[in-house]
Image 1 (tube, rainbow, N blue to C red):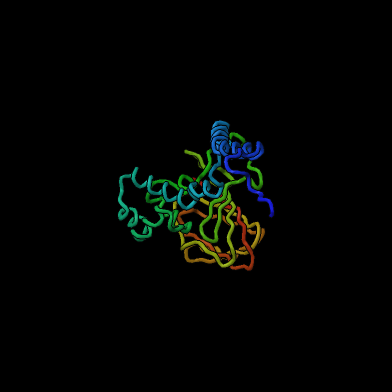
Image 2: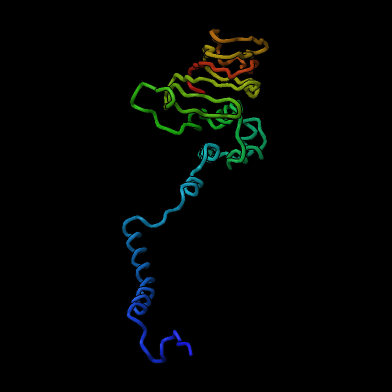
Length: 238
């Protein structure tokens, strides 16, 4: 008859088996201790970076918040600002909620309606003590296919404003704008069609221009590549 491999009833388990059971019983308590140590030392599981970044307002949201704040400070309704800026109330509502992006011309009209300027609505940083603005470190604001690279950081009371206008092929300003001051520009790259009142001029790399800001003005990139224009105006309006 074959011998049974099972331990006789009532016979105590081996020391090795007993030790294994003891370790198994202690595991939950050890895990709890590890969690406590991680929490105390800052090693507890953190929220993934992607989730954390999702809570940070983007440029469009930040602009919307500033538009709404400026409107509330002025004590004006959506309808009142919309009429002043020549836009619809529904569009302004979308802009304030970060659901739409205004063109530079629209942003300019909103700034005028709110008695401020584009710099105050879009600047993400305070003026630095250093007079040097390094390449690759300058703040850029975007509106569709047009971007403004800041050469002078806006500051309260500042009289001078300088940007590099970066215009993608086929992009244009949203109509023509009018304001106080004067402007001068120099085409660094590409080809632009500059509209001044009823006159239109084609300008390319190396060309310069100057005009009083009360003349209605706008531009369009009529070339096949990106146009870059050094644009200076005073007083600061953008």
